[in-house]
Image 1 (spheres, rainbow, N blue to C red):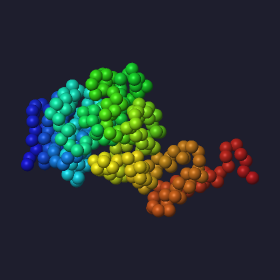
Image 2 (image 1 turned 180 degrees about the vertical axis):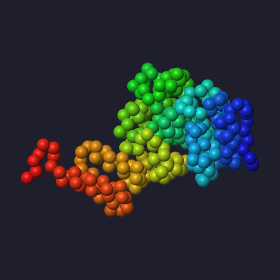
Image 3 (image 1 turned 180 degrees about the horizontal axis):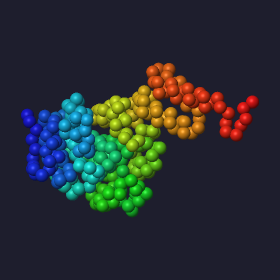
Image 4 (image 1 turned 45 degrees about the vertical axis):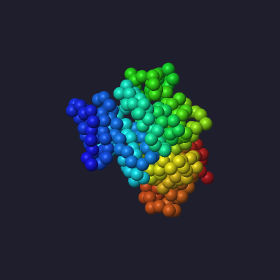
Length: 310
């Protein structure tokens, strides 16, 4: 069956292009900046919040990440797509979730998983209140960008025009009804860590992903971790222990190893850097690490500044 699109306004060109979202998907525009993409199947529902630009990147042709993550398991899926960084702070999106709540939509499913990263992570946490008992996986989420509460985060000046004080606004409060809220962040990125610290409660688990921030979703996908996390959540098996086991994959992830080596080198610890290079080279052929090892060995043989060699 071909995709259908309801309530189409032909001016919403980017939403028309979402017809590549999947064979069974129904695409519904939500004002000029948002759209909902829905396909129903199994009694597990994956709800993702995604950037429209990502849906058309790398030849995806409008296919959401949710399709890749949910379809192999036969799950139902619902994607909210945004044109740009909106944090989904739009009355049209709020009204859409109100309709789903009124219809008892989320009650049809045995398990509901909300997922998003960055601004989409904020939305995943915030709108999870629509499905009490859901599992939330939020990567590097902003808790809020209300200047009264997060005036210290100046990375998103355009977001100052958005209203984070109304419904679905303060994400940490919205996850109180979740069964589990996993907040993943890079502790070496202070602003992300400060947002993560605003999520509290016995149902909140903070997971540190050092040297992986500023694109954590891409890192976890490249390491094969994200699909496994989503799968564990859908099966009701997600835990900190599961994450830590999966996160061992960073030991074979070249960008992580590069970042770790750069951090060690920046600390002026050439011997430790050389040990890291040797560890990597024991099991992998990495010419880059071989070159860095030679440089670090040379540095470690030099006397410290101001010291005269014997």
